[in-house]
Length: 275
Image (cartoon, rainbow, N blue to C red; front, side):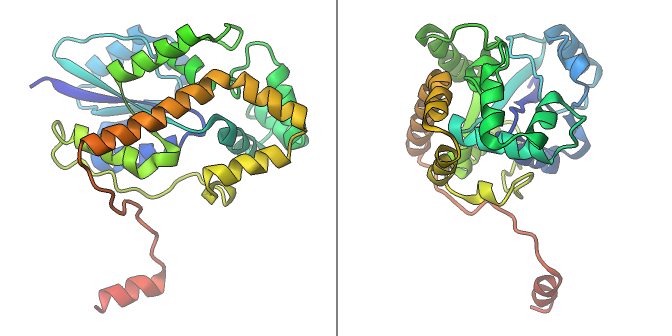
């Protein structure tokens, strides 16, 4: 049997930290959260060499995972990716960058001094900035937002998903994880997708519909319309992803179960220990 290596395409503010927690829990020190962005930006040549030279590694996560297809002799690559409603995600990006030290990035500097509305307007006006403009398709196809997204490119992204990825969505998080677990158990018998939520704000505990309403209420109507237009193809892609996850889950005859591991306080732990 060939060696199996999981590659997590950790998209910014798409529950990737929670998925990383799951991978770490399953693979311990065989999981690598690769944070050297300059190295990963070198592409598949670097990643191929890294996988071959680090033969004990079973899973790698990166914000800059190359999306190009590549083959390595006797190594089977499985790609993981999570999606999020494009409009809901914008609020999460802003809240995250606002909490960061303002010298980390231009985005964090702008978020720290701008209102949500002004931050969105700033992001949308920037040529080549794909952070809140059809971000998922741009990331999947390694293109900048200066490239005009079309139905053809969206369909190319969907085809890439079907052929190359195990994918999920934040809105259907538990279903998505159970589907991933079902697929990965053929390679890792004890793979378990139970999780503890990581890097989540109080607002993110609202439903997708509620979060979209928060965005809508905090943007002028013309700016909300522009934001929606700039994510037209991502919204279509996301809708298709949700439908495919539901269909796959039903076809696989799987059942939902409680996956979330809640932190136990001192008295809860004491009570449990006493039976």
